[in-house]
View 1 (cartoon, helix red, strand yellow):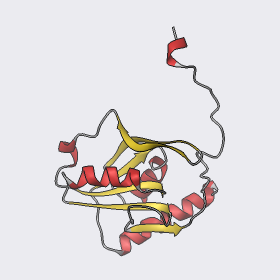
View 2: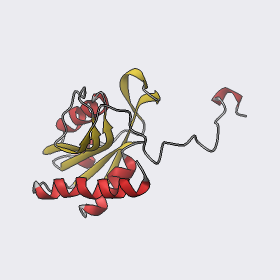
View 3: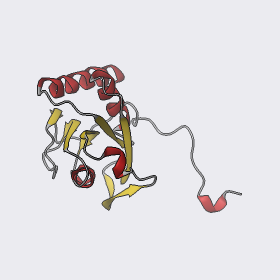
View 4: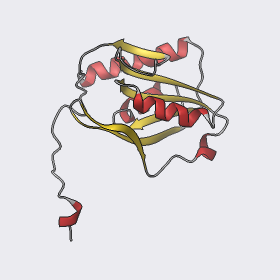
Length: 158
């Protein structure tokens, strides 16, 4: 996916949400892959409240932990209580990350739905809003190149 295609895809995904008449009060982007789509959706849907949750699951290309883990700082449930929340991520692959976030939100919010650029057939969570479905690995413009820095193990930092 190119940056230009990302812009078009985000706009089309937002149009699906708007056409459904769903009006989220909060966009919740899942870090890191869902941050840029979340911001694009917030602009397109004119939603001012953009939150994020950092979840660790993928450790490399098609390499992941046994289960997704919420990383601090954790989202304060009081901040989202009673809201209509649209959870946004780049891809629903196994669906583990989205399930964790949707389950967390469901305990605190009035309504939670999810939107993704891509959804894979094996995903545990079937999102309400999907730009495209694919069984292939997707390369996004923000993660297609290696980082410009390599971090040292924390034990070697002084």
